[in-house]
Image (cartoon, rainbow, N blue to C red; front, top):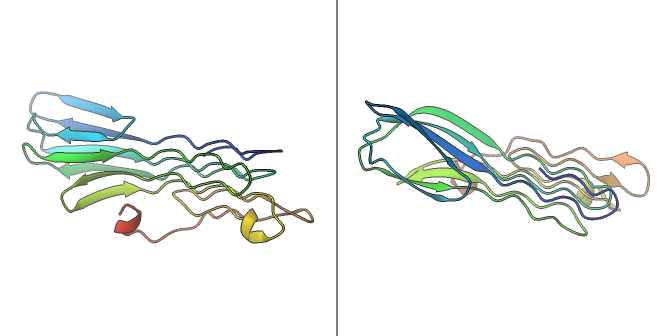
Amino acid sequence: GGAGGASGTGSSGASGIVVIKYKNDLRNRSFLYGGSGVFQNTMGAKTLDYLILAGGGSGGSFCGGGGGGGGVRIGSGLSLTPGQTLEITVGAGAASSPSSRGNNGTGSSITSGDNHIGANGGGGGGAIGPDLNNARGHHGGCGGGGGFSAPGTLLSNGAAKTIALNSANGF
């Protein structure tokens, strides 16, 4: 995730990636997706290994907490059929926010028909604020860090917590 802003805007989050590796009767092949695309099993691969990394959250502004890193999913032995098509979605890193809490990163995923494997984007970092809600980081793949809560010196807790995994957030 992006760094929190010491006296201004926090940094943007980094984009995610998806890596797939398959083996057919002749060789192993790997593909790195830095942007969304399509994989078609034209080589007769029977299984697929994958690494899915979602986009990171941006940092909060003005004494803000850092954005959380994008969530990660790793798996192996995903069954494939000849000619099967997989939709690859690579999540973007969150844009910086000039005067508030950071933004959440976007999830990354592999989808084929009704099968969906995904990772959640990182949570945006908290910002300086008169109340704890503005200072708290957002939930995400990894929660964003807490910002400075004014007045006083209280540094709120970040929002690193488990979230429900369902089709709405990539599972």
